[in-house]
Image (cartoon, rainbow, N blue to C red; front, side, top):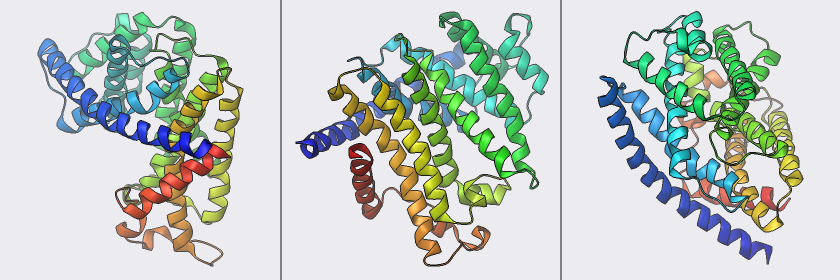
Length: 328
């Protein structure tokens, strides 16, 4: 019986996400074009695509999964707030990464918004989006506390280009950066998350950031960005570390007080994300073979390190891994 329910949920979620992502991408692009006209400017192509990609994927894959716990789906007002969040996060990333603004000015936009005078399109659009969603948030003190943590870790993440940064520092940056970024999304939904749901948002963010680093090993090595995955020595040990992150998330899922039928749907959805990290690690385990340690990752080719999720073998591994994680 469990297998039948699992297959039904997995197929339903896969097709739902594919369909909804296309729908939300079109709606989001139209919305951004209207904002560009309103504020007299344009997003650069890379930023525009980044906003649409993350918005259109995370609404059906993550937000709808959380709301399904309460027999709801993301409504249009929630979608608008989430799109404004991804405008903020993407433009603020540019402010930090491209050094388009000083840390002091970035801080003023986020935490002294009413006193900041925007001087260009990116500043105007991010300030507008930030104020719109801040005006909606019910618990502003808690929200601003999480936002300040995200601001601090974004600034701290510049240290990841320093080869002398410790693994402990990288790990803390990774967990905080991903955890707080995903947790912020929960504030834009009409449903008030329970403490265990909030913990799921945060811990899912830990895992998503780790997955991103696993999938970006080759690119990060080229840019000199220090991450836990590209400093990895033993893929088997890293798998144990990653599985502990997944186990911590699953513990919070079990503590959520909703009927098991809805919780299974939620579990399959989140484990579908977690399974991606395991596939990436298994590829590294195969490279390591019977050796005590991985070869120097810098000596490996892009083909060795890129995880191609369009390969039938990887898709089949993903299905089996999601089943294993959901039924454990």
